[in-house]
Length: 60
Image (tube, rainbow, N blue to C red; front, side, top):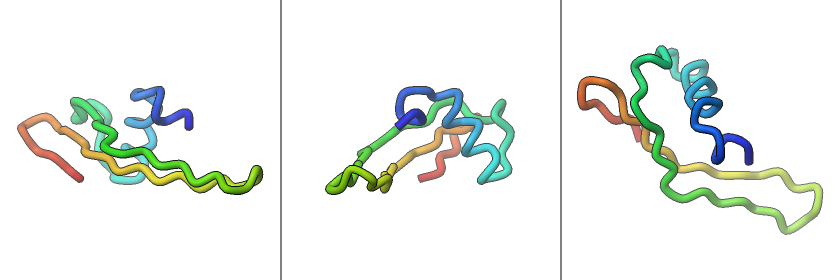
């Protein structure tokens, strides 16, 4: 999955979903990426994220 390899892209996606400016994001921690691909056409991926923001705030 592209977002697990590119933190800039992941921050941009989270910014859109959460309405938080990218500038407020310090780091995105990927806790346990799981890909379910029993079938070749399956596209289900689950990401457990922890978003570290400026000002010592975290969103899990």
